[in-house]
Image (cartoon, rainbow, N blue to C red; front, top):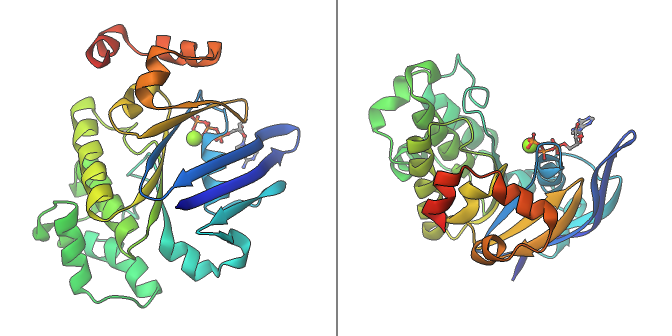
Length: 248
Ligand SMILES: Nc1ncnc2c1ncn2[C@@H]1O[C@H](COP(=O)(O)OP(=O)(O)OP(=O)(O)O)[C@@H](O)[C@H]1O
Ligand SMILES: [Mg+2]
């Protein structure tokens, strides 16, 4: 089943055509990688899909319905986003309990016991509820951000470079957690990444974005082995050699 579909999607910021004629399908239960250089339009596309941004033209369809016909509260429950920087995604003056409880309170769903359940899901100890964000490591903070995103039981999550600000060893841990959660909760992800190395073992399918356009699409394996575009080849060559040998 098609979870998300974009039809001739365009977004202009003045003279900048951030997203150009994007036709994309994200199937239910898949992890779709979206890669491209900085400024290629990845985050803009992610925000358009979540209806956080209005397109200049074109349409986004979610579960068969145009997103502008879906009530906002329903959208915010079903679709979530996880950002790169777990520092700025959490209010420094809010304890972990309140950070995770906030979306539950707003949507008047679930009980306070749900917070404990969510901490278990992201494998954080219950004792963390009384801590503040600065009392956590970067990886732990990103787990809290993930718990918060999962609070309302969404079915689709845009992960916008969720591991880019973390140490390499912690990156692997968080990717493993995201993958486990995706399988356990039958989630669909749009997974945005700068470089191809991160998506290699993680995504079912990868689309490459260049100057606002989708220029190539394949499984990660075939994309590495046989890139069709010069631009994709450049992205592959930008991966540190050591890492590439590990992947190949
Ligand atoms: N709110 C905005 N106002 C004006 N221009 C914007 C806005 N948001 C994005 N842009 C422009 O749109 C283009 C695409 O930006 P976007 O943030 O989508 O790229 P990206 O692929 O996510 O980059 P990165 O990998 O650095 O996060 C850029 O030229 C950017 O400057
Ligand atoms: Mg971005």
